[in-house]
Image (cartoon, rainbow, N blue to C red; front, side, top):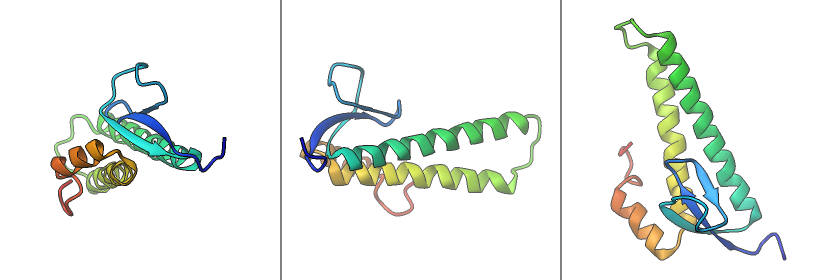
Length: 113
């Protein structure tokens, strides 16, 4: 099997998972990807998870303050950028049904996030 061969994967953005087995867990979207593309999406999910942990830790540290710290907006913008990149990737590699679903979400529209 070549590393360029595309296989179907089942993606849950909410859970940050890319599944090889359709019945392994809940998923929202389907993509066709080769090994390199699979790894690329995996890294994006890891980046999103790291950003989510940083934001959560930051807010837990800042509990009790009423001020909106400048870093809040930067962190939220970073999270949104990674999430948008994930949906762009899924749209590009998705099945026709997946592409239509992502388009209907409106998440690809500039400024939507």
